Length: 383
Image 1 (cartoon, rainbow, N blue to C red):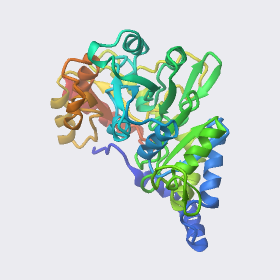
Image 2: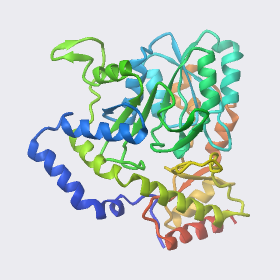
Image 3: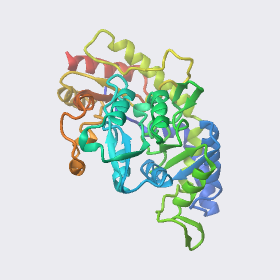
């Protein structure tokens, strides 16, 4: 049996009429840039996350960029983050002329290690001491929150703003000391992506930034429209980072189904966990499963570790089983960042993860037979 890594057609089929009706309303109104559709979706996301403000943006990448711009990050500033992430995290920092100060990951969750961040902030390598951190940017990778309480403590101790890269984690919950919080709502600004493959995915690019601060909401809304507060008056150098009304209409329909999709992904993850128990397959750790959380993990990806990963990857592809490597090269080893001065061996946990990780199909519409086919081929390949 062939099983794709993702099947967006299966998600679309039962929603087709509702989505097309919403798109038709936008087409009939001929209001494509911002407007009531975007405002409605922003309000619904803000309510879902439990924050007062949400700002629709053109992509998850632009959400990160706008968030850093709203905090006035630029040349001479440094941002603390993870080397094991998608390019947009580091790209947004460097694009503004800031320097990415990286700490290694927790090998069990793949998220930024609070212990590593503490060492970086309190005793940085000599060559990095000249870079003064202004922002802490944790990534909630694969659908599970980073351990935010100790990270927020460190941010307060060192006077850092906090921007959360929650591109893969909308709806994921964290058991904070102050109560259960959703990804993106613990720091100053949280950033989401609505790339089609995400748990909440649009019909193209789209993103969102959420915040509890009215001043940051105003800044983000100004930044997304060329830094303009009124037509032809530009208060700051910025860009065009607007969310399209058509994307907002589609996403608003899908948002109503998101909790059910999260639950289906978790059920699939539990099946995988049971099936791989006792094998050479290392299944992902749900760090907050023992807490009273509904969405302790939303499994944007189900990422295993396997020996001889590249051979297993090739075997699965040959068998028609969809799989992907997130991510084969950590950010500190990317060619475009070679001038930053990082080297192989700087972040051993990230480098080891990059050599072992493999993502399996986890989308909600998977059948048990499809999952069993995935399990059978993985176990056969691992041997």
